[in-house]
Amino acid sequence: METENTIPADFRVVTDIIYCEVCHLPIEYCEFSPSKEKCKKWLKENHPELANEADTNTGEEATESKHQTRGGKGMVRDESDKKKNKVTKVTIKRCERTKRKHQIIVTGLDQYEIELKKAAKLFSSRFACGSSVTKNAAGQEEIVVQGDVQEEIKELILKNYSNVPAEVIELTEDKKSKKSSQQAQAQQAQQGKKKK
View 1 (cartoon, helix red, strand yellow):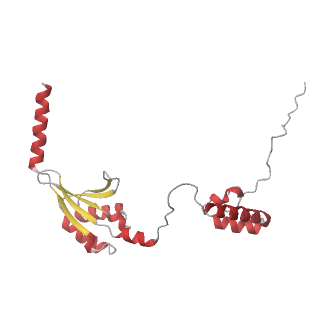
View 2 (view 1 turned 180 degrees about the vertical axis):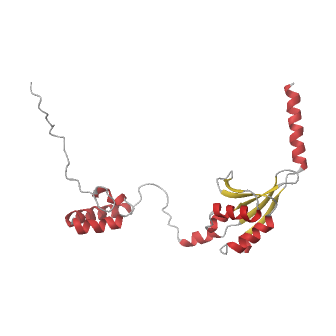
View 3 (view 1 turned 30 degrees about the horizontal axis):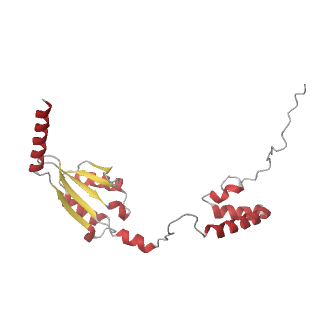
């Protein structure tokens, strides 16, 4: 018996793969690289015959990609849409934790390109209290500051962050009503009676 390794006829071994010096991928994958233009430039300088092939392939694909293949309208947003979204409210809400303790919740600062962690650090150092960045139920990030410092936070935002106009800052209050807490206690008492 022969122990010789035989390769099937339909099996192809590729040994001459050219790697791009810019993105370090095979040149076929340069189009997926973040530095696509630099890759094209390198390819034209070092392998002009392959660069011409790549240009003809992308030219055909570009004409095909102009047409939609699935439903829906291809909507192109211009920069005016971004400016419309820019005018969002900065809400400084005062919430009552217990009878005499409050916390302030600041939302909307991230729309004005303010780093929330740095702003929370500024609030905590300025007011000598605890503050943190959390996500609310809607998934938006907000700053929670312990203490009743609503007016002071507004003044500090206007002083330190000039890109936030005074017109967009909204002061609100969220009080726990006595009736709702009494109703909740009454419902718990009724549920306790039903179980017995």
